[in-house]
Length: 164
Image 1 (cartoon, one colour):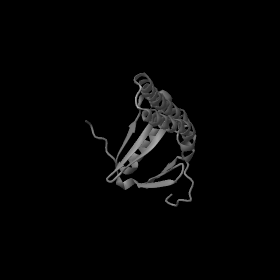
Image 2: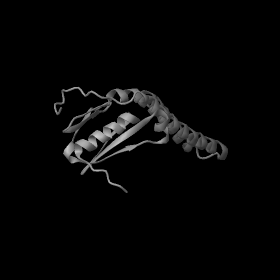
Image 3: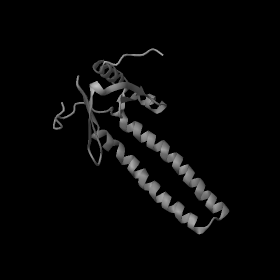
Image 4: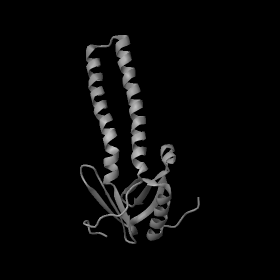
């Protein structure tokens, strides 16, 4: 499993693309409203001419970001792979540069799930694995898969559940 030439078997949920796109749409709508408000204020109060040009430059960056937000979710989905065995959690991701992380089970101290409102809509959850020196995440897994994976990692890492 620690051989980097081994293909990792598991990928994220196909709904991850829809989730990420919806997340980007919401962010872009908020940014567009703020940008439109500044353009209106510039027009209404006749601010200095350089303010318009700064806003125009921000609008260009906004449009580039909008295009990227439509292209990046499928690319991110295709780049994410993970695998798990009794010794290691192996993560592989990255659109431009490939990152491979090998997390030893003996170093894992905590494992948790997070699920926001938008993730609940698509039945997704993100898994977070904490070690002494770092934190690792597997985003946008199907909720059931994430729960199973959390239990398997906890079992392999011998993490005891603490009552609060």
